[in-house]
Image 1 (tube, rainbow over the protein chains, first blue to last red):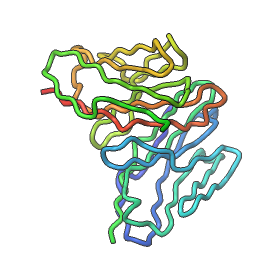
Image 2 (image 1 turned 90 degrees about the vertical axis):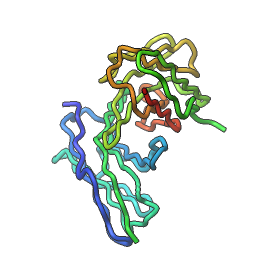
Image 3 (image 1 turned 120 degrees about the vertical axis):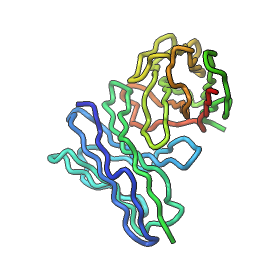
Image 4 (image 1 turned 45 degrees about the vertical axis):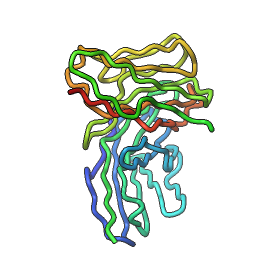
Length: 112
Length: 115
């Protein structure tokens, strides 16, 4: 119930291509769905986030698509660049718990 | 500069020794967290604290202990009871309750190697 399932585990994309990472959840009580980006040897940092009453959120080349009925959400990175090479984590939280549930992560490599 | 400071960045210890990792924040956040990250794995929650003098076990608390005597500080002790302590440890903080939008601010991490 508390899990967030993330796929794929790793992703290789050509520069300029679209990177797509998918996540699924079971708990309908989740209030907020953030995505984190982590570079090697660093702590994760918030990339973009969405609330369940919104179907899409776009910030630059990064877009979250949210399907409430299917309990799925995904991150799309348009025009992927080598600098986007990192590990990406989806997550979900119920406000009153203060406990963020992370997916298992996707290692993205973008080749020139 | 506001943020999370973890120390030390790298730590080597002999098997059977207790180790304490430091985490300090100046973001005035009520909630603080410790995560463990192993190669190719996700972030696993060890302990978290929503308020001073209170903390809860996460998913993998066995072999670890914490204290929260001050709002700014949340040290983690890796005890000799932890079977496989070599890992990358991440501390984070956030607003609490309805102000918590899921944005955690992470430190740079502490890499512990047990020889």
